[in-house]
Length: 524
Image (cartoon, rainbow, N blue to C red; front, side, top):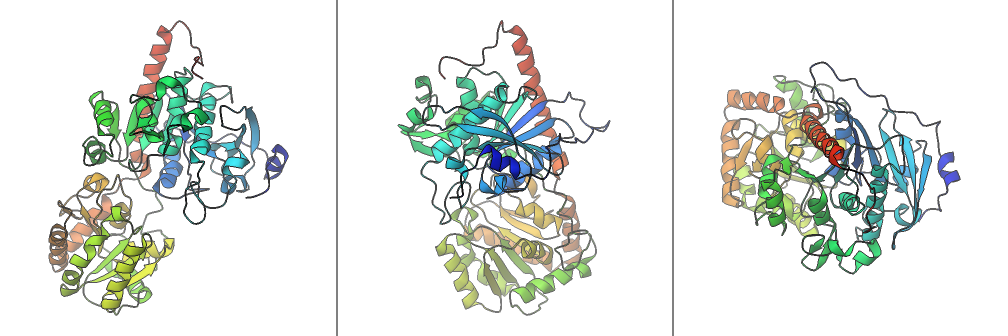
């Protein structure tokens, strides 16, 4: 635990006075919409703190949306945020509520003009480890307090009481750590429209129902129509219940989670929201830095058709994993090694890959049993399988650029980004037809899909890939199509911009019909 933070110590950690963001002006061909003020509420922002894809999305999407709306973000005051070196101006002190301690709201501006609001509460956020747990991977036991405080602070900012000069027209909360934001706003009687994005339905933010007293939840919220979930209190369900609109990160995943098989016990609620046209799926974009012509991490840059230059990356990957050069295809896995990723299918296909002249390189870490399984494959087939435990950004990019095929047999994949990164760099993904993989890979055009979560079905897609490799004109044509397939964030942001505009306009019209607008109810 670091030293206690005060207003003085925070404001002394500066590089100058805060500045207002510089926003990109909307070109004439962009959506003809009126700009709205939008608040992003997220527990991760890749500029400062990142655990997974949420951090990437939360960093990229607000910037892409700046062509359409004025977007600011709110994050907890983790050490990585407080100690980032950016100036923080304290703009408000918020009182405690129930068991939630008091906090301060700070404001900081990143180098490119993105404004962040920071919830400063050292007793909750000034801790080592990840945003969610200690250095050993154990969740903090008071996460319900930590992220309820975060959500209530966001609700206060949305009401205008924190920063009267910048009251958002819409609030967009992300995943379970921010899910109480629309709930608190509802219980406080606030009418600002809300969007809640589910990045992975499996992470629900559960705690015991008796914690409702600590969080100050109103009695009417504790039933089946509120936050109760099989006897637990679910942060995620709160977001799904109280937000005006729900989005998730691909069209196929939005359909999948309305069915019992993928709905994690929430399919009934999600089906109802879908029937009311309040559930949408928008595929994530990727950053412009994923460009093989300019990426400084690559051994040699290349563009579509420059296959010899691309092959320099293949030679590097072979050397990195201790494999001899070969005329056969190179398969790659860049992944967390967890059950979701379906890598337990590997033993059933590895001999097929080797028999087809292929090699396999794996970069990742995760569950010990999966790490051990892959390590054993590398020991059994040392000339054909290489495994590096861990993750290195530069080597991951070189693997995308140097491999012929990327294996992604995920059981489920809300969106996935690795398949798009691979496509950008000319590696054809071989993936289970689920979630965002189904939305971003065109079978036998920009990659290969298989339908059943079995080794036989996976092997069928690998066989098609091996056959394609033997036909260089077809392989090169598919590579060229794949390199043009991914959408960048500027395009991916458009449906969000349209949704924000629609919800904000509906809210504006509704407010004109209301005789008054009390910001609080007697619930809170």
